[in-house]
Image: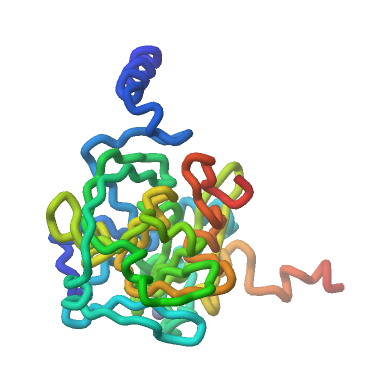
Length: 112
Length: 201
Ligand SMILES: [Zn+2]
């Protein structure tokens, strides 16, 4: 980092992506901080938990650790959750161990 | 306890009630920083400010050229959509009227663009007739980077997210193009006196 963190109050309050785990748990059935996201701006892939979170703004904003482009916005308002994922080109979410190996076993009933 | 603190709140806001839009509170001497991204630190040698339209560049000012423009000092109340208001903030800068003086246009709207990628939109009439400025000085000091320096837009009659920090361009257009918060459910216009916080308000 070249940011003079101690001199810049905004940089000093920047959080890592795990800070967004709580509100995202309201939307996703799995822990998405372990998901890998490919940035729509620069194409770099990194764990959501390793993204930069700006939590003081009117919504929580996750930014790419490579290019600082906006990846995700999430906010709560009047009983609704708003989620903007337009800055993520691809989200790879690890499936929970308890749900087995993959869709073949999981979806057998519906497909058959 | 709740009766006591409610009483304090009323006593503090009463003198300012007619200056406080609905749902807002007086933040007093503090100046909260609500940032959705890292603070840009654009060197003044690389800074410029421009007015564009859909066809391209209309006017451009370097930092030195911008400093040479006629300046105004204004004292205004500001109102953030996160419900704090701050009274009697003192700014200095250049009126949008001055910047548009030699720019003939039939545009109806403006999109403000900033270092760091932030954008916000508003009708052109809201920026003219002494209602908006590009400011580089706050309380007599150069505008601090976390508050939008080198220069930010100041449109005090709208919610403060319209007063874009780190301003670099105003783009004149014939349509209203929603900016950063406006595309996330915030009001397209944002009048604090009509409490236009979210789309649908
Ligand atoms: Zn990126």
